[in-house]
Image (cartoon, rainbow, N blue to C red; front, top):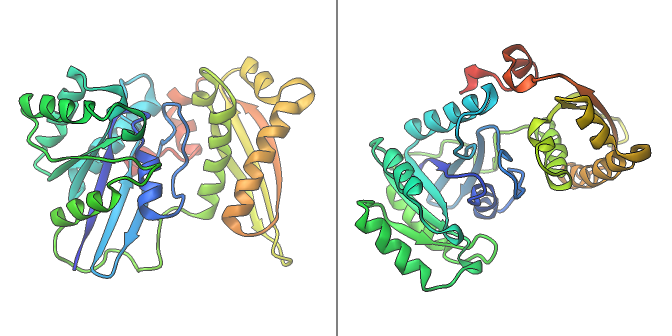
Length: 296
């Protein structure tokens, strides 16, 4: 059989996490239309009778802005070097720029087999697909390009087949019943952050960390979850809470529903908002909040 790791890389909002979730068949990574949705390296594992594809969803490719984004880029680069295959996810709807081509050349030069998933084909003119494929070829990108739509399920089986061809022949890396390496506690925090990304605008979601203080399953099967939303400014705290706490109540309610779906049980959720100024540039706080440089 064939098995191995596939580093899923690409610009922010290219559709990496959506593609991984659909390929795996379960939600293993949060999704939003905003940059910096994915901050950690997250495994999503696709199991077939004769193949196991271990997708490694990575943070989007950004310009370095602070200590947190520096660590995110280190994660992406190191994951790409260590993987058996690189899957470069490109937003076809956005076209192809010189910077896109430069990034593709950078990662294809690592010596790791690479495939390009050209996404969002359901919301773009079909004639753009061969045009962009030709543009990439003329620019010296010799990597195969697979046009896909994760939301419509287009060409996903073809993408799976092409990835399988590039994987080494070896036994499974993980047991067949495993679909992700992340704990329920981690996913609870990510679901809270996802709802913040979806509800709030501008800079606020990017300056937020989620710290789970309590994650306990009671004898009756319910879960007690106590968590902190950490932001960088007092003004952000006021916006997160909203008038008479209404914004926070709505966000927590949305998050709780998804937590209950994840855990298959009732969740009693308690949420507080705290301020830690410039936490994204403070190494001690990054470590405290789970963004350890050692893991990158």
